[in-house]
Image 1 (cartoon, rainbow, N blue to C red):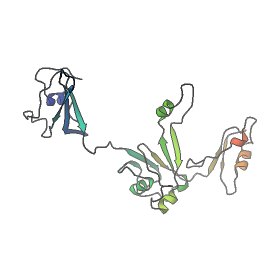
Image 2 (cartoon, rainbow, N blue to C red; image 1 turned 90 degrees about the vertical axis):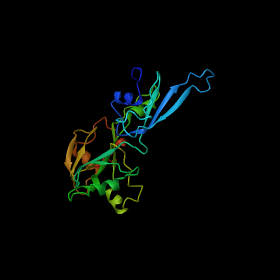
Image 3 (tube, helix red, strand yellow; image 1 turned 30 degrees about the vertical axis):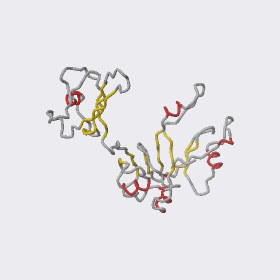
Image 4 (cartoon, helix red, strand yellow; image 1 turned 90 degrees about the horizontal axis):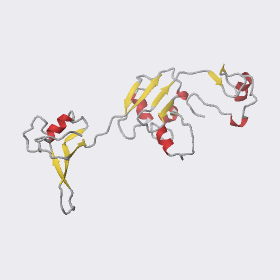
Length: 239
């Protein structure tokens, strides 16, 4: 809101608002003006303004003088969408941020854009981290319900299947969202054991290593362990 002064025009108001942004349309400006219609059948008048010649041309007949209580709306450019990005880190050819170039931009599209993986990348460990809208989830809960939500979820990507299908398999080729993070690790031959065991530890992986063997190497279950709730988290985040 800006204070009204006699002789103020649309261009004056836009300049007071520090101009039109890159996403704003100078040809799609609308003035909504009170008519004070005594019949109350037409309380608001709509006036369309085109300042596409630029604010420098203040003598144009489109630079309409304003009245008290006018509402001026500057529309977005037709087709404008804010840029959204995903990030890639780890053992890839060109790590960094990449824009979602289409509404169906996928993991396969991203792999092509960052020019593939380095030779020592561990493809079975590639994962996607996606931010959770915790506020939205909490708003869906009853007032008496309490819940803790993780800030991120992790999704394992089956890179071999994505590449094999050339991005045509919707089962494996996820459509990406703004803020997604793709992490490509090196091979990690350690196995970490934590939770209700005698001693949390890390051991070297070897062929034939079982969950039971890993737990035994950490001293076994402690007295608080719920053995039926045992689970394994793989390097790519899958359970």
